[in-house]
Amino acid sequence: LQTTGVNGPLAGLHILLTAGPTREPIDPVRYLSNRSSGRMGFALAAAARRAGAQVTLVHGPVTIPIPAGIEAVAVETAQQMHTAVMSRVSSADVFIATAAVADYRPESPASEKIKKQSEHLQLELARTSDILAEVAALPRRPFVVGFAAETQQVKQHALAKLESKQLDMIAANDVSAGQGFDQEDNALQVFWPGGEHMLPRQSKHQLAEALLQLVAERVKQK
Ligand code: CTP
Ligand code: CA
Image (cartoon, rainbow, N blue to C red; front, top):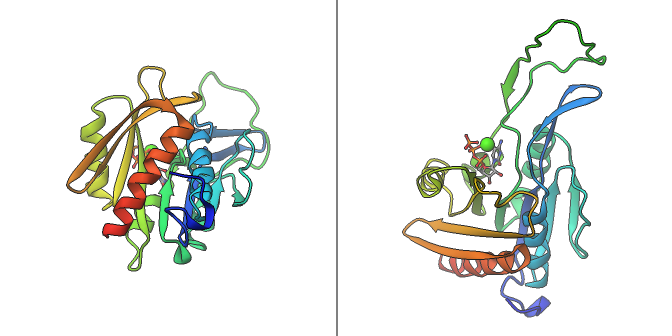
């Protein structure tokens, strides 16, 4: 992709992304979360902007800077991320879910700090809603891209998610061997119905541009 702004390959498109982890409160001072730096999603947001898109980035708590020229919406919980996405998705042409959304949240967070008492503590967890699957199930939906972080059988799991969530594209990364999380570099296996493309290990910035190139090609064909 070239840094061509209004003439770029994504000019005229509104791209909505999720990035980073979510935090699910256990009590006022503790939470459940996922390992995610937000780097891949932020790199995609910046690259989409450079490619001429209007960009909205709904992100969980991260320590990296917000790219210039985009609309950033900060959230904490999966529920807040869900609400932020659903209220903005109708104007989106492309939705890219890179967030490491918590699959479960403590069912009833304690209103006061939990004091340590017995040797064991049980937490009751409830499923969060699957933002990506809900967006993909909308009657008028954007081009929908999911991510899959897998520790084994990467291709099988990615293809299963592509199919079960009815995605237009999925980018899978192998997080088993110190890859993916909190790293500047990453590699992605990208799948869509009837096609695939391997993006070898490179910086997340280069990877973001390469992935958006694939998205731009596929969006046009849709
Ligand atoms: N995702 C989402 N909302 C959730 C859970 C996941 O939007 N509540 C999105 C992620 O952002 C990612 C994709 O779904 O783009 C796949 O996430 P992943 O955790 O790999 O898959 P799950 O469907 O949650 O299944 P599992 O964790 O069991 O592998
Ligand atoms: Ca999950």
